[in-house]
Image 1 (spheres, rainbow, N blue to C red):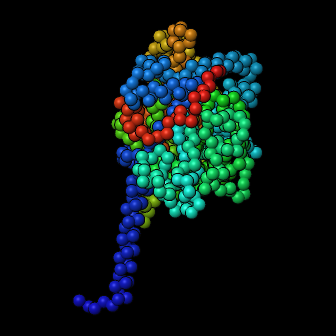
Image 2 (image 1 turned 180 degrees about the horizontal axis):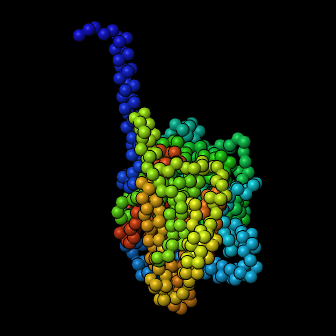
Image 3 (image 1 turned 45 degrees about the horizontal axis):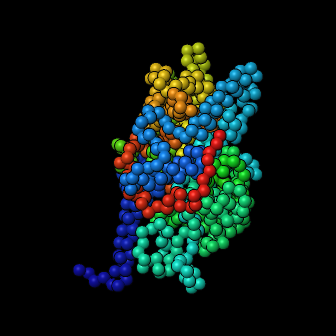
Length: 611
């Protein structure tokens, strides 16, 4: 063999290294960018961490404490005290008494205003749009309000799913802070099952835990803080972030004083930078708003300590990098996804799963549907039907999976296969002609079908009910009236069908029986009455028209929100039928044994809900 000098060996080694690195890169890309966007079903990888969520139903702190006591009894096998949920007994959707009364009033106001508009005309109806009124409600979680930040419709009418999130950093135990740097120490969550030896050595933990709303329909983060001196956020039973005692707190430059409306309430406060901790993973230097002032009765009834928005960057106020985008950038999870499981009957048995799924929470495969305009988690809605009657139909072309045109385009081509190229970027304004519900003249006189150039199904954990825009909502309510539950039949209240388009451009029908969209509540011992779980919400024109699939829908379908490789154009949502029952609840308890209890900081103080 010819003699090779040391320099020749070095050159060969460098070349071999480049080849191996290139191969590793191709494998990595193949796992996260090529296979994932074109798969129609989830691979089934296990979640890295599961957080149990409590469903706040506008019934006050006392209802939460009672539900958590039943949850604890389920864990220990004891008999719970007080009135328990009738799991499996009711055939219809269950909400709290305050929620049902509010929904009933909403419908009554709708019928009253509809009669008024018939007299005064449609022009006045179109101009009577408010942020949280009973007539035409704008889905305004991120509507530009000029000097104020976007609106989030946090109301007693809505369900909110709350869970613990750690904020800030403290060095422990006492005495370590004087001679240790936080970034050089191991992080041990307060609820971790750690040994005494680990806890006795210098380490860091979260400064506080707050119970925050996890919301896919908004993007920014708000956390109750020590700056709040009066009002609901200053209540001793509420947890607050103390920026003075957090070693990782930083004040952003330039600083901003923020203001935001939450439905019937308002909050304001300065921006801050700090670390966020959820179970075993952390997000560093996250920008968020510190709640300094709260104004509104909603905060008295909803034990609100924060909100973590899980929406897209296009929705973010002031150009702040959203929480989950920082999760992606910092590589906090192996897979850039989170999933929700909502119990049909138990307000304590809900969960958000980080970085994967758990097959015990759903039946069958999880099928993916591409996000087609990454502002909301919005999917392509092809049609909506009540029974055999189509009320909404989109003329938007079906997706045609794009194949690579050459070997040099293989990476890009396969990554976008099965994905529709957006006609405009998420921040661009679409023409108003493509945004309005338009009545197709071909159908006048023979049906109430509305055709649109495009339609969206928005998946939103922060909205309780199904929604429709004005016009379509009128037709739905004309067909689905409130009545005694015993009189609800397949003929009087037929199936609803939402037709969506999956990642291959194929149509999938989601069929909901009346037991899945009619809400039941007993009123004063009389026969149970049922009302349709629908509200009227108008999507901002550049992102609609659309129908929201809220948490009532998500009680029936396990959902996965997947950002794949981080590119918003590759985002997708997966659905599978959710499992229900005691076995699922017990499994959730096993997964979340170490989680901080929801009632730990309540200190025995409760409030009752009123409407």
